[in-house]
Length: 328
Image (tube, rainbow, N blue to C red; front, top):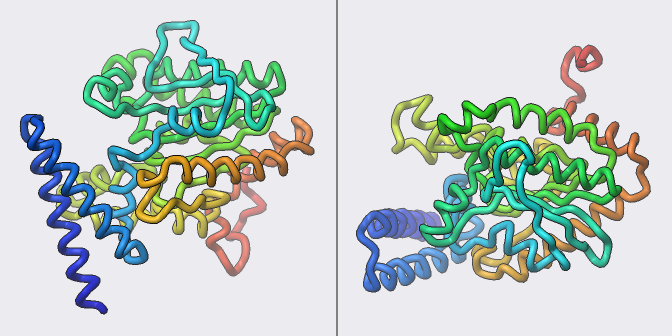
């Protein structure tokens, strides 16, 4: 059994290398067919060894090119979606989408980071990495939801906030920091779901919720495994070691109390059944919203504050950490 598992892992790694090499080549019909064939084979192998997936393999699943994106979840879960644009200060950021919608017939606000499928869409969406105007747009929509007393549903799938010069000049860090402060004070229910990548402050900038859920093969981390390997060891070959050390998978984060629930994915990953994945997400969101409805605005703020002040304490089985009563 151990030999079979090792052989499967080596085959997975070989296929991953072949896919990377083909992806770097000039696009053509032959390349597209070969890529599809290799990805199909890789998906089947991962399904066969799903119980043996490493943290790095789960990170790769979270980036699968056919994985459902935020726009897909909006279309599959919500009705009457009316997109809203612009931060009213600089521009509209296509990497951050949002608008009014209905969730099981009830009005709500839904927003999240959107990646593209093909090259043109990826460039238009900036690979799902928001700029300051994206975070300011998200905050504008959340304030609008609070004004009309509507719950907020947030979907996260981003490698991180855009680190370009223009974004820094327009106050990227300030925009994220303001979102953290303002989201902590919202008097309506906020339910956050990490559907793919949950990268650094770019994810946390819209991630302050009363409930934080996570798809089974998503990840949530202060830095990507590649970034961690580059900083600590200056060696990209140690990326799998970095992924394991960071404890970024859903099972790790559930044990630490950083996410409230892990939403199971269909066999082989969400990319194999977007509708089935959306059904599971819908069920969890409905359950979470029902639990939050009886709470007043003040109770929602206090509960959200309490949740984020004790992050990680769930891992301490022997009790609260020393001097925990002195925490601010």
